[in-house]
Length: 353
Ligand code: IPM
Ligand code: MG
Image (cartoon, rainbow, N blue to C red; front, side):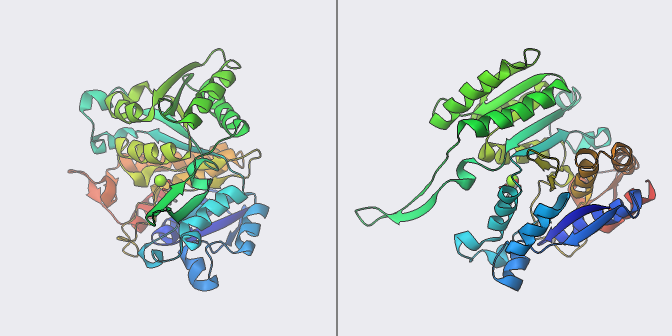
């Protein structure tokens, strides 16, 4: 029995997680023990804090953790260190999952949902963003203070140490070895000292992978090249904040943020799996949310944490089939396709397993 901690979260989180659990139960009946865990806004409401110790403990003891999304306007007035997002960062840090893998691949039937020019999209888009997940500004010191003149000021510290850069670089190069053997490291080395260290370490690690071509791009240029020549990217490696921003950009290139899963891994294979989208409070409870990103997280979990390749393939094929059949949730709807609900999408995927 594989123990999976499940964090439904807030907003559309419970909807997309519910859909995913149904898919997992269908594809591998009786193989999982799911334990639901409170984290995010719902945990603040119930326990006064976004990540109760018991929640983190359950995740740490599970074989893998599946997460929907957290946050929403209801908790906007929480003090900064008691926001739902703090819970999310606490889970990432507590599980020590420093490598967040975000695949950006255009599903052929969704080519029309790609906003890029046809000749650009047709060259194929299939890259992976390896985002450092437990360091950088996200985990640096955050401070609001007063200047000696009495003005309000604030600072957030970006800090990386050598081992944090080295281990994420290894993840990227290893991934590249199983792909087209190109790593693009993205930084802001023309301005940031952290980025200069980043570049130095990535170059050292590159020496251990002589078959892989390493390119460096400044993050501003990278955001431009991603829409100009997306087909040229294979594996992108970058620090936490840049990875956050660029993966949202990537999601639009491949159609919708509702389509992209992610796997966060550490030194063992007890991963954390979460779609890259947020809790979308504007559509929560309306059965409009696209569950595909989370369902594909389920497939990633089977593949990477449990070695269940065949079952993972079946889920991915079913998603492909549904898209080929022209069925679409609102976020990927284009003229000539058929609009269905989030639960309708889940049912159609299950029917094709
Ligand atoms: C993501 C999200 C989170 C992040 C938010 C919700 C804190 O945007 O997973 O990309 O910034 O990491
Ligand atoms: Mg993000």
